[in-house]
Length: 275
Picture 1 (spheres, one colour):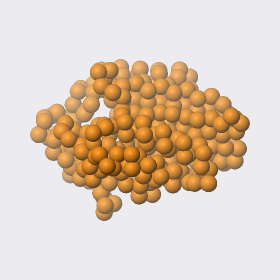
Picture 2 (picture 1 turned 90 degrees about the horizontal axis):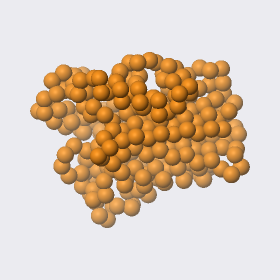
Picture 3 (picture 1 turned 60 degrees about the horizontal axis):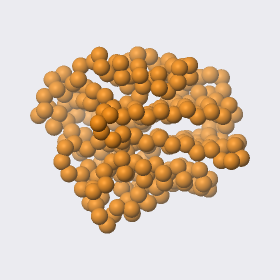
Picture 4 (picture 1 turned 90 degrees about the vertical axis):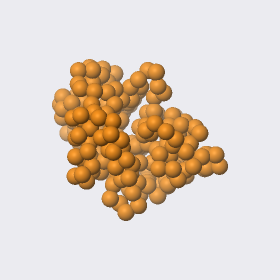
């Protein structure tokens, strides 16, 4: 078994809001991984005195502990408890009902001798390599499938880069994040109930050769710049390592127009070869 992970801030002058960790038991018979992408709030208050890096460290640490130690709990249950623990850690000092309270996308996986389980929430990604070499992404597509009016705002921002368009788009997306009527998309914030919205599944351990977890700063290689499909992305990481993927993304970002939101985003890649 081999695990290779790299995380890099989009801007070296700002804290990295991604989180990555993995745990392997002393027996060598299983393991767990967690990758989070903290949601950068717009300028202004978010109701929290701690900030996104603090939040992802707390949430990620709690989720890895539970995923590794509580095999009697499904991964969605582990996420729910981790969210609740993190909320309790700053409930007395922060406004957890603020729409910009710290939150994150989530990828988690764990494995033992029998099964491989996975969980994906929002636009980070997990890629599975099966025993026959097939590469299959596990994605939560709800953020990419926004209502047409919001997609039109996003396209206008990418075209013009004008601040009024960007502000309108941010407000529209915020209105859809964790919307109670189920019309939008979900991130892990302060409500444990969001764990039930995650994309989950499991496979026989014998059917999975490797796992690749990525934040959207790394999936830009496929999703934004269209430099190859998921199989090509996996092959690149397998051959040259996680850092090579991030380097290719940084090159593409530098050569692209700056109107695509953040020109450089935090990027995280974790490759776990199970056999």
